[in-house]
Structures are given as C-alpha cells and as structure tokens.
Amino acid sequence: MITHVQKLKFQTHHAATLVNAANENGRKFYHIIKMDEASMNKLNEDISQKKKVDFKQYGEILFSGWGEEPSKKVLQEIEKMLEE
Image (cartoon, rainbow, N blue to C red; front, side, top):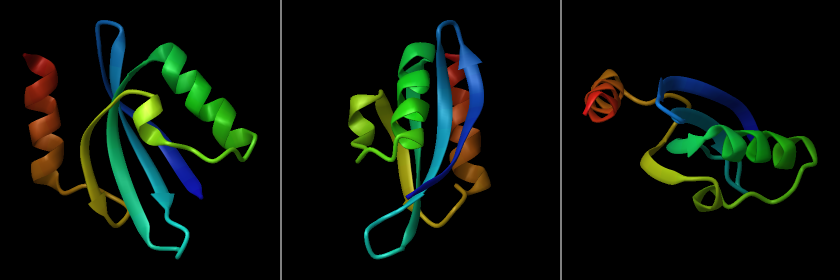
C-alpha cells in the first residue's frame, strides 16, 4: 500500500520523489526515486488504480529504508546529489 508521494526537489526534468509505502506484511518503508514528470504521473495513476507497483519501473531508486521518513543525513545527501 502506497500512502504518500512527495516531490523533494526538481532538477531540470527530474525530481527526487519520496514514496512512502508498506509491504505485504504492513511494514512501512520509503524509497527516494529520481524520476521525470511522466514517470511520476504514471506512478500516481497506477497507485490510484491500485495496481501492483515495481518502483524500479518509474526511475532510479536513490535511497531506501524502513520507516516512513528518511533521516536528515539521507535528505542532505539527496540535496548534494541534485546540486551536481
């Protein structure tokens, strides 16, 4: 179940997007995915249609972790990556 999709930062035609979800056992996790606008729209469409989602289809997974939110350190690393 995907509960939240948030654009963290745009860079040219891509965004680092925070996706909150839960696995089949209900354990919460997050992915930060670098994706373009078309992929973000497709992800949102697939979520709304309750399709099974393979996050690798939508872009490059930059970070993943258990829980709802990445640490401040991870967010700082994302900022640095997108500045380059």
